[in-house]
Length: 112
Figure 1 (cartoon, rainbow, N blue to C red):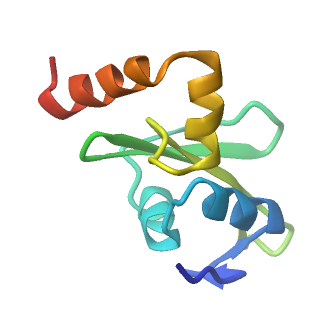
Figure 2: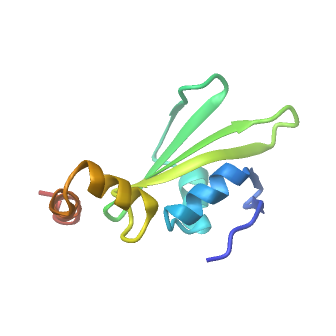
Figure 3: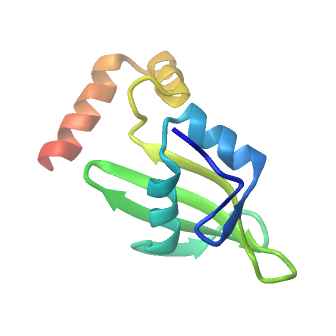
């Protein structure tokens, strides 16, 4: 996958690009969550916002803020449940079992 520092009219921090790569989250999917969120709310840090979108069984969350020039800066992003092969899935497996992750995916897939 190719990632760009400027994409979709937003500036993507190095941190956000590292997170995209490690989480195997395509930048166009993250951008769609930012541009067309189902939910927007204030972030935990002053001046930040969370943009949340559900795509199939996944929930994509983007953390962003505007700079002084009113340009959007993408600070971080993640996807839940984690994608197979991603760093987050490896962390998830250490906290819980693969079976727990699999059940979470099945519940979301079949809306049980």
